[in-house]
Length: 545
Ligand code: AMP
Image (cartoon, rainbow, N blue to C red; front, side, top):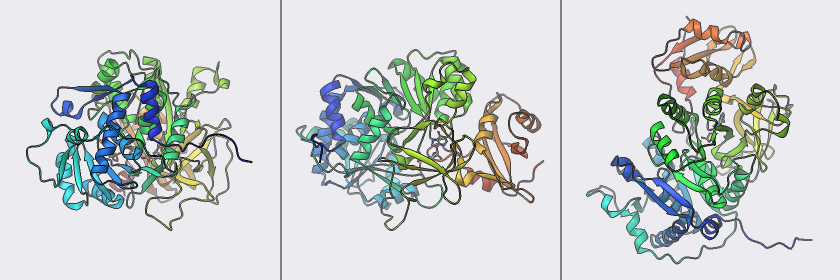
């Protein structure tokens, strides 16, 4: 017997329609790219109701450009209101929004845009030079500059260069969002691909809407219409961790920081817009904390922030809470997971525990959100116990987890229906998962795994250390031994021996690195992750002092 509930496909357009009808007066505030380039710090503000009208105009404009359902529309853009309109206008009319990471190498960008077969490319004013260089290698039939006529370049080598505002002004606001199968592809994002070519995760309307329900839940991001949310995580990085969709779905005010992501700019926008919730990778927060610490400032409205994308050092979690009373939600996910998988919040059983005990739990990457299941397995695929000690390959499944990559037919990605994440983790008896490494970054010493992340976190709790990376170096007896690469904080001193002595009594003796080297900076990927492969190459053949 079938149920008697109404059949409504889960569509992205429903989120902006809902925000218009039920939270129509709530604001979206953007630090504009034009303002950042002219150093005026100009902001743009409007409401969900106005955004909805413009998303409909955009849908009509796209039809006018010859975009049909399932066509890919590329974006090279910061977090801003026009990018927000593209999120809804493109997917809402049935086309596929392809957000591209502008921090990738130009060769990678053109490879990705061509692989996705992007028909039109929308881009921010700061990327005119980049797009002019890319265009001869692309197959786009139009390039749309996300600005107004006043900011259009006098001259450009771009063929068929159009102005976003002009396109919108000419398009009708009358548009009824089409209703179609919720499994239709809505958007795509390529993984940064540290080895080989990038791979495309292709989201559907259904996966996106379900992900929003999961993300907004109290033990996930706990979003509400009382929040003012600032995603510092880019809208080109895994859907800004759902926030560009979840904010209209819950009616939260949305604050979009544009291209200025330094500590001062982020802090000032947070304060002026009374931001309560933010999100970003650890490096962004290091910059913010430095600015706030250095200038004796406080957060007057921020009460929590989600940090993920790479392991959040406990030192950041502690500084936010102890100095500023801001709760850090440590989260883990992947582009292939829309991206949220786990979030770190405490359970009732943690109430009353000493703070240090609670923190041990909060330092982990968190528990699964309903919708995602996970397990750890050994080399034979056998499931490992949830004892907080056994390390294994982390596998996940759920309706917002990828089943395969775009245009890689015939490739088997899943193992018995589970997606192998490439991460190595422990899971404790309460279901809190802790990432110890990427499987390819694991250090195997005498057949036993050493967690590079544990060592890095410990190193970063030393007051003289700004950033640290732990990598494997070849060893004749143990196969591999850990080498620690450290960036010192400006004006601080620490020697190799002091660094090594600092580990004494804090981790197993055989985990203590064999050597420490100091560098001015560490290599990062376009999404802010340490590039350990590069470091391994750099220190290949390193002989400990
Ligand atoms: P991306 O697809 O660029 O978001 O990268 C996903 C990968 O980032 C994961 O597979 C992890 O290796 C890493 N990652 C994301 N969040 C965390 C976290 N909180 N702690 C450690 N690693 C993380």
